[in-house]
Amino acid sequence: MAPAEGARPDMHADDEIHLRRIGTIGTPFTSVDGMPIQPAGAAGLTGEIRIEPEYVAGLRDLRGFSHLILIYHLHRITGFSLEVQPFLDRSSHGIFATRSPARPNPIGISVVRLLSIEGAVLRFANPDMLDGTPLLDIKPYVADFDRVDPEAEGWFEGKSRRAAVQRSDTRFAP
Image (cartoon, rainbow, N blue to C red; front, side, top):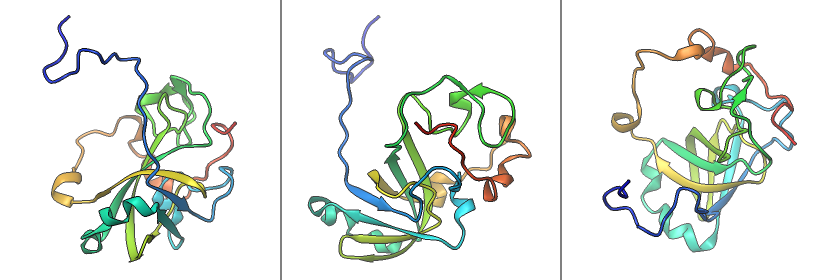
């Protein structure tokens, strides 16, 4: 099979990928047990991000956005399973049909409200990640790009609204 157009011929599917921490997320949650499973469950709480000094220039023009997409490393997750029982259901599902943190690549994403930027510190509303979480990237939330009205939500249908009150337990923690 020929490599995809633009692919490097020396790259293989099993090659390691190296990412850089651009900052650290601070939240009220030091344990996964009892923390919110989605930002909707963290209403009224705030978090902060401390950007590493070499990346502060990248914050330029971010003040003009109300919401951000945070991409982060789920640093306290060890191992994964291809089938899991997620927090919002009693049945087992394939990992890629869930928001479970126990993934082959433990990467989390959250859409949060930006409250302020002061130098290298961003304050945001509704944190749903652990204190000390390594931040990998920030993207501005743009409704015309990011908002969709899904036609189907699979097994989440009728269950996703419970994320506002559902709390994490230790099922995915080491």
